[in-house]
Image (cartoon, rainbow, N blue to C red):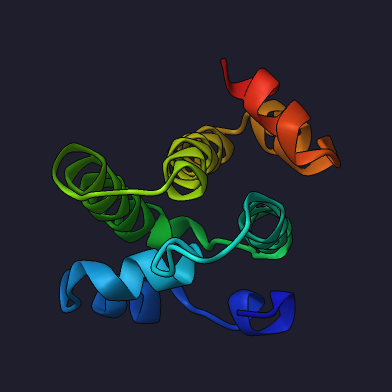
Length: 132
């Protein structure tokens, strides 16, 4: 998913995709569905999503919907981490995706620092250090 595509997703569309979807749609959104993808690719996609989170405005009336969407996304990531066979790159990606969702939650509370740190991490291995 490109940054432009990500920025066009409304909270309502994201809620529909998350609540009405199987885990595969959520995993695809974070580039975690394919065991052949490299960690560099996954980390780059997650940074693109993070930039989209920062650029996307959330009207005050949509904050509660966004909170529900984040909780549903986090549940998919947690269940996947607990139950699925994963490659090392997918496991790293799930940990990073969980941190990204947490950073977006903090943004919804007015704290931009975790999202800025996530985006500013250019080296994928540094991203894992940031998350530990």
